[in-house]
Amino acid sequence: MSGPRTIIVGPTDAGKSSLGKILLNYAVRAGWVPTAVDLDVGQGSITVPGCIAATPVEALIDVEEGLPTEVPLVYFYGHQNPTENPELYKFLVERVADVLSRRANVDVQAAGVVINTMGWIEGLGYELLLHSIDTLKADVVLVVGQERLYNQLRNHLRARPEVTVVRLHSSGGVVTRTPQVRKSARTRRVKEYFYGVRGDLSPHSQTVSFEELRIFRIGGGPRAPSSALPLGATSVADPLRVTAVTGVTVELQNSLVAVSHANTPDQLLSVSVAGFLYISNVDILQRTLTYLAPCPGPLPGKYLLTGNLKAFFE
Image (cartoon, rainbow, N blue to C red):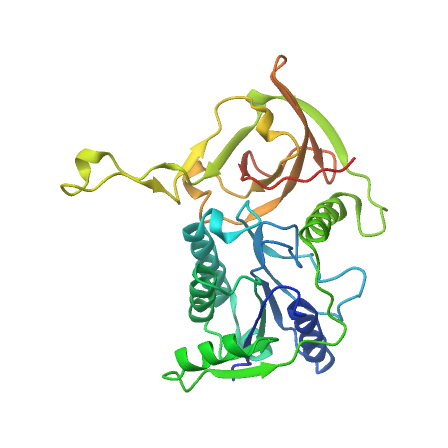
């Protein structure tokens, strides 16, 4: 028996994440351990923003604590908007789907999946949404708060009778947030990762030479030399290219970087991350970085990933 694979879609601030938590709690109350999947890189309900993540939900979701983070599967996208690198976004969605498929036993499959999505539903956003529905094999699509999106998806998925598209009204308590409020929420999520929701954690600050760290970013490098391309074609940036950050730069300051489980740079694309560091200071002259870690001790991996995700807090 396979449980429902429910994906919740709709515009920004329609109440998608709240609905997802309600459905997950219903499943837990019924004795199941459903899987929560978060594709909203702009906010992040499982871990920090800028990630695509999944986690089993074994207990009722606490209003303050949010989704459980004991054993999450996390891939670092590194940006708050899929427009930065849509090919990487799709690649990571495919990675999560593949890992969940291989891990799923009979009980996990029967418990079902609840998938939260971003609020970008126009143009490329709609294409990424369709990709997520197909890749994660969603069979229930809940459309919150927009009739036009409901009609689009119903027409697009008409040839797939195994997929049910349902329209839901937005909750009466939904409040539209300004860009500044959303930015503040992202910073708060990052701060909660290090200090805890109630401020009861004690993160560890450490200063190291730049040479002690190996930092990489994904995307931006050349895809292929012009000589290797067809006549008349031009080389473009490779969205999945892994490139080492070779010099100390102030751009790293206030950046959130991920500590990868990868054993080699070649694995950085396909391997999940162990956790995150916050680079609080960059000293160009001394060639040192000061980072904040959730706890003292050696890092769980020697390769770090960076994007353009920033946070500003003391």
